[in-house]
Image (cartoon, rainbow, N blue to C red; front, side, top):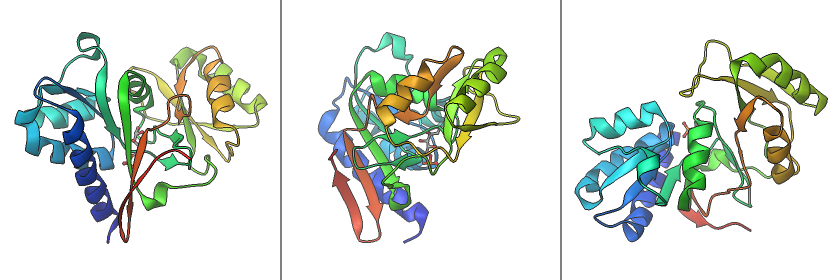
Length: 224
Ligand SMILES: O=C[C@H](O)[C@H](O)[C@H](O)COP(=O)(O)O
């Protein structure tokens, strides 16, 4: 199977999970990225069976609306019953690195506001130790140099993501060669640097279910 076929298979499996949770009045939380895009296309096939969605990025909002799905502001909807999103890396405890596409902050907000977080990924994303994928940190633009110096003190190698602005008007520093041995501590430590909006580690709010696309089928995994 190609990587896209694996992504499509996990997106379809996520739709089956979501159907068990949502009803006519429900709002679904929708993530960002190529795997989430397959999920959006799958979700569109049941668009008459739920009320609408909250989107973790402008790109996702546009794709949902193009399918005729109503997109709500998170402020108006309260707790979200289910959130489906991809990941750049995921470990056995369902901690994730996210934000390769720069959508980490809105993703983290919707994840935090959701009752069930379903991570959808192909098997290339499964790792023992997070950090092989550069960890994104969203930063207020005027704080970029200060935050970079503080990250260097933590042993990281921050690289400014050039020509990129987040949906929130901020910049991204990507941390290369930064093995994440204690995701919970590192997530909080980076977030404590003044000028950081958030970082792409999802350990304080891990996924509840991982649907992993493998050559021999989709596996449904819970945190170890
Ligand atoms: O900002 C982007 C998101 O965190 C995505 O969930 C992540 O980058 C995975 O994207 P993809 O499914 O395209 O690999």
